[in-house]
Structure formats: structure tokens, C-alpha cells
Image (cartoon, rainbow, N blue to C red; front, side, top):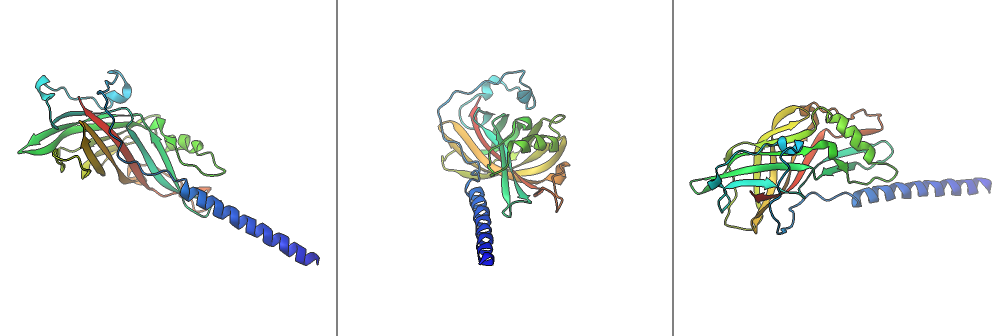
Length: 257
């Protein structure tokens, strides 16, 4: 009789453990933050950045003649408040069988894009977008873990004390988008991406929409952490393993200056 009771108790504990694990996995899968998408169109005036703001200075605007502030798409487009940037990384914790997706974001984003026109086609002349990685905050949830602890570790990985900004500067070239439609268009921007003082060529795949004088752009680029001298935990028997393939995300709102 005692063996039967003990067997039932053990069986019950196993079922509870399984149920708890399934519950955690289900919660993790359903609490994953959605990918950044196009911002909704909201009438607004162009925000003026503080001239001595260090983040703004990381992307100094070009000096343009007064006649360049014309109607139409060609001209200087400035990143507005409410723009968001961040990253996604796949984690595997020793205590949890299901992989987890770490997601961190910040609204500390500044920048601009200078658009020209040649032969009736839009052209990127130059541009710059800067993100303050010191302000990245985790937005994912994981039962039993304080994801904010990851933020300080990430700042160390990114060498944020010495290189606080991630900067993307697109290459000059044709912009495969039409000013004649308000539909969502798909473009690819190639350029130099600087992370932690290391600069490499990368590409962002973006959805772009021009509506009511406002440009919304959202998309991502996938980078290899090692390419930027970023060392993420990889030990097989460690507390956590991180996939070195990191996704960078942006959702930008731009208005013409």
C-alpha cells in the first residue's frame, strides 16, 4: 500500500513538473513581443533636435541651401520622436527546454536621410541614423527571471561605455521607391554599420510608406555578433547560450525639414 501511495505521489509530482514546464513554454511563446512595424500616420510638426545633444551630434546634418527645402520627396528627411530601434536574440537557458527570444528597445534614435532625384528617379545622396545603446531596455518577459539584468550585461558586450552609439550610414544610390503611391513599398538599404567601434557593410530590408507628408519605415538587418567583435555566451554547460546571429530592428518616422 505504501509503495502504491508513494508511486502516486511521485507520479503526481512528475505531472506537476511537466505541467509547469509546459506552462512556462506556452507563456514564453505567447508573450514574445511582436516585430517592429510601420508607425501609424499622425499629423505632427517637424521636431527640432537640440544642437548640442550628443546623439544628434553623432549624426551631424549636412548644410543645405535654402532652396533645397522644396515640396516633393527630394530633400532632407529627419527622424522624429517616437522612432524605435532595438534587437532580437535567441537565448537558451539551462532550466528551460524551449528557446527564448530576448528583445530590447529604445526610443533614443536620431538621424536623417538626404534624398535627391535623377532622371525622374529617387536617389539616396547620404544619410545617418544613430541609436544610443546605453538606453536599450528589455521588453520580453520570462517567468522566474529579471530580464533587466540582461541590459547591463548587453551594455558590456557592446562596449557601450566607450562606444555608446550604433550608427548606420546608407550608401549613395538609387532608392527603389515611388513617390506616386501611398502603398507600402519594400526597399533594401545597404550601408556602413558601426557597432562597438567596428564598422562593416550591412543591409536593412525595410517596408516604407509615404503618407500625408510623413515617411514611415520599418524593418530589420541580421548580423553576426562575431563580425563586430561581440562575444556572446556560447558555453554548452553554461547558464545561458545566445545565438550569435542577432536581428536589429527599426521603426522610424521621418518628416521633411
